[in-house]
Image (cartoon, rainbow, N blue to C red):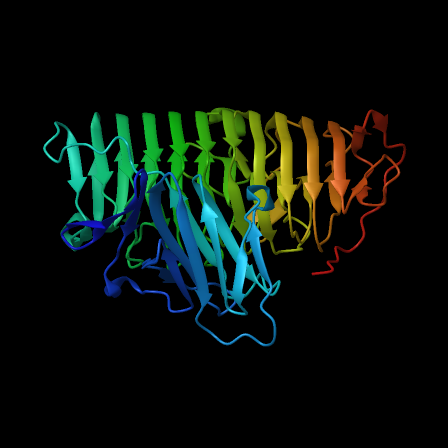
Amino acid sequence: MKIICLTGLFVLLSLNTGAEVYLHSLPPSVNPSKAFIVKADNKVLSLLSVPSRYGNNISYGIFSFTDSAMVEIKTNFPSSGYTKWRFLPESDSIKYKIQNNGTVSFKLYKPTQLTVILNGDYRGRTLHLVAANPSKDAPKPDSPGLLYFEPGIHDIPASANKTISLESNRKLYLAPGAIIKGYIKAENAENIKIFGQGIIIPPGDSIIHNAIDFEACSNISINDISIILPEEGNGIFVYKSDEANIRNITIINPAIWESNGVTIANSSNINISGCLIRSGGNVVSVKGIGNNREFSNDSINPGSALPASDISVKNCRFWSDNNNAVSIGPETLAEYISDIHVSDCDIMFVRDEETNKAALSVLSLQSTDIYNVTFQNLRIYTSGQLIVIRNTDQLGNKKGSQSWPGEIHNISFDQIQTFERGNDRIQIDGWDSTKLVRNIHFDTLISGGDTLNADSPLFNLNQFTTTITVNGDTIKKPVQDEPVTSTY
């Protein structure tokens, strides 16, 4: 066995020819998890503990490997009776062996992002585990234009507002085992890359609430990093920007309220792929907030602000503890919101069953035109409500206006499958006879093994909707609103 250590924090294990495991070891001062013991090729991983709204901390770990890796997971807390293991998403087809009630093992042959649930308790002590390929684009520390963070903790000083400000043509690299305790921000900049397999942990004591914040930037790349927020705060915020690629990142921020995963506001040409995101709020949100971050304003004409358009979300794994998995809106201070495509994603959990929250939502608070939105080939495991599409002028303490032109139209749902318990209600509400929700199409929507048709009681429409079709058949008559209930 060959062992190579870099500052004691990054370990390479070679157990046989072609098979290598890299442990991204972390110091104990970053709140280690004691709920699980995870081994990769018989070496113990460092796990982080992150508070959740349910009072049960969740655990997160990351390692990388080549060829294959034998993984063992052991619960480190009492379990009543037999331990039932579940690995999501099920499309990974993890074939595990139960060693005893509290221990399982399995072999990995390709990278994955796993979520482990015990005894069906989605509000309990879950584990999120990332098994990645080793980084192939690790730069030299002295590369021009590079900020290089080696393994270890890097506290950004208060004198800098605990913020790393990036200028144009800069790269920031986090080596495996590197932890930045601070924020990253760029404004009016271009050609920026943030990459590596290190972790950003915001300190939680600043007025800044976004771990990464881009405003008026172009040609942005964020790859492979993890963002862990132990307190309320957002992961990535992209505002008034163009051309951003967000790939293979992990965000864990299960606190409630202002705890979104990735927010895209008044921006265009954005690609999000291969990400694992668990958030207390919206996992991915596409919205408009005007020209000066006016989240809630009923006096601004949305037509005066930049649009949000040409946004792709694919091959991701989502979990929301208190809001929507994918939300278009509800803040819609944008000239228009269009050409949003969500495909090939697994939505593992969406708790809330409130009227305006769902696994998939399209909500217009400030009138603008929302169109050409597609949701395709999605697997939804447990959801408080499945789909909501609505015009409104009030959401909680957020005040909007439906006095401006704009409708919700040309929205399609294709190959959507739900599993398990939950409420698969689909709510569609227009505003009035001049502002309809129209041309909403459902094709192959499967709920609990049954393919829905136009007569399904799961569809709830008010009278201000038109041309709502299911597998080509038009829903004939509106169904009046009823209270939202959930079996979970």
